[in-house]
Image (cartoon, rainbow, N blue to C red; front, side):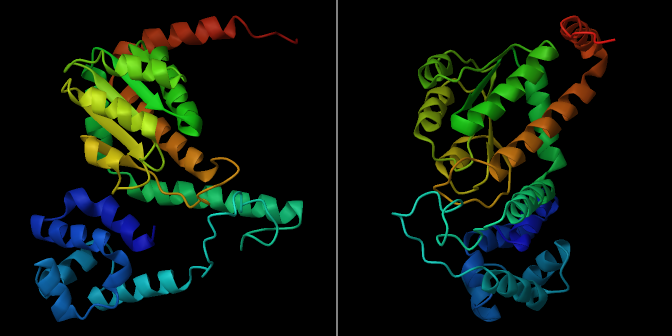
Length: 295
């Protein structure tokens, strides 16, 4: 995801309807945008050149030319590597990745840089209005059901633990069959939270389909805006991370998801602090009682 896309997503809710129309076109045609003549761009998008200039200024550029130049620079700077579907785990294999490093020092530097970049990019996608709405839904829900597989399941479990600490009726289970079972039990008074980096995980999409009939609130935490999960959820909280598709394990994507979960929980807990203070204190005290005193 380019910086231009990040800036568009982070500013989207504050844009005028006309600028949002231009933004929608930009997000759907990002790779071609810098090469389309301005008159043709206006015709294809149905948005005037003046409106495009306004959008560019809203997201921090001096104009359309500046924004298109930045897109070109970001895309031209990408490594031109052929994708070989037979080569898996290219984040680890020598000679199969432009980021492969021979020394532990280089590996540590690259992993750290990728993690920091994922957190920085995700922070730019955080829409306060979306987090406030998600917090309101969770606060008002009779129950909260969480869904996630693999590394996303670890993040779902983390959010579930946090919600339980403040007395929320939250449920998560790593077993996909159990998730599918409780997906059929939601009502319009509940909220379902789906976590998937790609938004294409089959088990998650099956649960989403089952949940939709209930009319409950649905929140998706995902990287991709154009995915089945994004299309099916009422509210989306975006992450941004760049990883090899077939990789040894989720790294920066998991960190980005955890950042979103931490932010969402903090908004919720701060909003309802007076009501949850006692519950938080009780859970803290009982956990402290199991610690070993080495004095």
